[in-house]
Image (tube, rainbow, N blue to C red; front, top):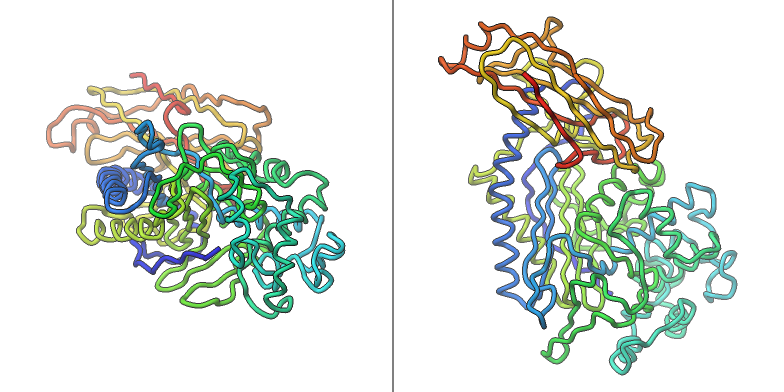
Length: 540
């Protein structure tokens, strides 16, 4: 299968990794929130127009597009049709087969098994799967992951599979039969001698998983990745069921549109077959490249790439593109579907594209998304907050040199929910905050922060210690499968009347802001609290 490369586009955030911030100001948080709101208004509209135009001007049937920039927000849009026959609109965050983006999942699983001691990167395949490969004794797990095994491709080097599916859409093969198809074509190269993209190599890796775990590949993916990472809309299937009951899959054959939703996918075993959403893909790649799934040394092995041409490098099941910025990810194409998933570690930006047409130009849509973000920045429609100290895999901690650091002993990260309330002149108030903690949060290192700020419109009040009012709860103290944390009251805060009336241009009134965020020295990924997860009551 061809690796569909997108062209380089200058991205909007230009920051350099300099280490984790230890101090963060509340005023900077409000700058971030303001920027989020402005960015949301512009980007949401622009990205929706982009997808709609792409659908109108290309063969695309339907698509989902997600852009996530840490510290600014997430934008997820959909366009086109989920079902041509019924003219059903494509919903946001639909499920799609993700094609070769599956390889990032399978390679992550293999590396996790390496970390657990079940296998090593240099284990010869012959010792795990006797007589499967002619050169099995000199072919390693590592070579399968980075496409240097010399095995030909049962999809890219022959039309046998697709010819059979044209005759019978339920045609199926065992993994061993898929490997034999490639073996019968003869070797592409000696093991370790050259890069040669091979879907069959990942079929073999699927068999490796089954050999060392004594369970089906799909079961192990669920146990080791999907469930513990909270990927609730992600699964693996090589059968004939549609990826999403509400969305159909299509392909063009001789300029005719065919519904291929129930075609058999056994030929994608290991090299494809994962079903997911743009939201789950975003979470997965951020956790992976944030070092929260495999340890630092194995992540370094995975992302240590070698050049394969045109600015592209390949590591262990993941690609790297380098020009004026660095991005990691993969693309995919499966019968009825197209996909793109890329993460920019310096800019802390994730972009995911999923489409329900084999021939969908997901590369073009990806590039147009980058161009749209860039144009909005150049026009000044979106003002990006400066983050001089991003850390791969962590929510952005904003800092502002013009403001005083207010919190000692840890940066406030991932602030996402802000609640405002205005009162007449008052001397005190109390705050009650209830947060529902999801099961995936239990036992994670870090703290929930509840920040209470008092403003007269231009100045924020601080207590006698020079701090805003702060509470935190350590996640590691949580053991129940489902927990509600309640802060009631935070504390009674006295506010001087001369503060209320003194510096706001004569307007009486007091603003109270409550921000719920998350911070950690070793962040397990984004822990943001949205909507129904947070309830705030402010009482005068």
